[in-house]
Length: 106
Image (cartoon, one colour):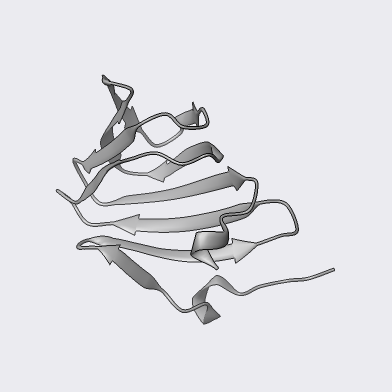
């Protein structure tokens, strides 16, 4: 068994207002995001399937041109290679799971 304390994992800020901590298993990557209100995660895509759980806050998520307002309790499945972006409305806390492992995030 491997355990982690999130607060002991170095936080990264790949985009202004978008901070994240990563945990990697053998087959998956877990991303623990904190976003400031008004933060933007630019449009991008990747081969990984992604499941996002909004734990706190409200955001607009655009996937392949379709935008939906998501709030705490929302879960979204983003297919492999789908273009997607985020614009936060409020401060947000989000947990993303990627399969397979995001080697680019190691």
